[in-house]
Amino acid sequence: MNRLLLVALAYIIIWGSRPCFCIQEMNMEDLPDVSYQVEYGIRSQRDLMINVSIDQVPLVGVSLFDAFLKNGRNDDTRTLISFMELMQHGVQSFTVDLESRRNQWMLKKSNISFTKFLNVFQTYVNISDNNLSANMLVLLLRISPSNATNTTSLATNETNFTDILDENLGRQRIYTPDDLRYDREYGRVYNTFNNDSVGWPALGSFLYDKRRRVVLVEISESLIHQKTPYVFNGSSVLHLDEGNATLGIPKTANEIQNLSAIGWKFLEASFTTTDIRQYVEIGYSPIITNEYSTHNFGDIYPLLNLTILWSWKPDQPITISSNKRNQNQQLTAYNCAALHYTSANFSASWDVENCYARHKGLCKHRSQDYLWIISKGHDTYFEFDQHSDSQCPDDYYFSLPKTPLEQLAVTQYLRNSSSEDAYFWIDMNSIAVNDCWVTGGPDATCPYQRSVSKRNFVSMLTPVTVCSFVILCMVFYLNLLHVPIHNNRKSWRRIVNEVSKWEVDGVPS
Image (cartoon, rainbow, N blue to C red; front, side, top):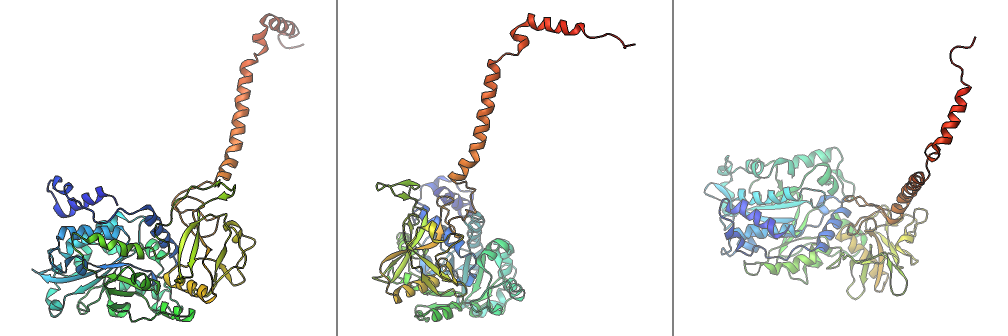
């Protein structure tokens, strides 16, 4: 979202009818603009996880209280603008600390009402509610301990959570406990061990079939005695670690599979650029509690840059001109993705690669998400997975890691097989449309834009061109060749008169 939209949001939501010149004088943005690489990368990650259950989707988060409000000195307006910026940059979960003051819910240590906060939140949900930008958002609600004994008196029309959420967010965007019970009853959920009683819907079903965007979880258990039908109880649905991780690093495919059975794995802690990525790789969704101020909020960007895209290398996917020959007269088409494995630190990330380069490919077991192997031969992307002959062995198919845990399984396999630094083809390309990264092999189409390949375009255009040329030639020829009656009028009239002599008038006797 550009600067103009941020100014408009601040004007509409925060200042109301104040003159806009005071807004324009402020430097509204603390984070750099979202690059096209990040935008395309986030979209490709979301699309490849369309069949992943929502409890396994990695969600980078921020604690609003710790990041902005803890010292009590930050400007409330700037806090809401920073909150909007974080969502624009791909942050999908937030810890929201609430307390009751003046008979209404307020964000802790601020003058921001929960109602105003939800207005900003709803604005982003509405703006991003399209196939290009829609994604799941999670709010972790924590009620201050001082209000825990007061929850009965708080259940009024002004402070009741259900009323507030109905008025300022809307039921149609919230995935509720009743929705989950219904989906589990009718088997519309997925779990690692195919146990519907603990499963969750797939991300694609959540976003596009059910048209939901938001999951609300109360993590302090202060509202457990209130009727809050829109809010999940945290202790029953998620695994939340504070400060230190309690889940160990899995060493085998079986251990990774067992870890994937734990849903909604959050780690709320202060992170550095050296450790936050490691927690994402083992399946945690980090909640950043680092303290910032108005002046240094931009310092959070390196943490986001390392975690928002768990798949692509930083500054990827990049757009490179393709479909031409390089200096060595080799075909180039930088529209394919390859997993780049680095043996020095046993890490992997995705790069844009020339589709005509020759690499081994990554193959996934058809029934085991965490069993991977690499093909034996080196092939171009187009040759690797043809319709008639796939280079993957039996019971395996051309694929790519769809979650950080699956990518961890790949790196462990490569480490155990003593693989050197190498590129491996993965099922991700933008062959149909530049910058539209999709799965499904070379023939996959972009769901967001109609495309016609050059070859198909030529084959479609050739008959039309030939017919048009023939018609044009005929018109030109007829313009040059006059009709005989115009060419020699006297001769033509004499012939007509001779013929008319043989015509008999009347009825023959």
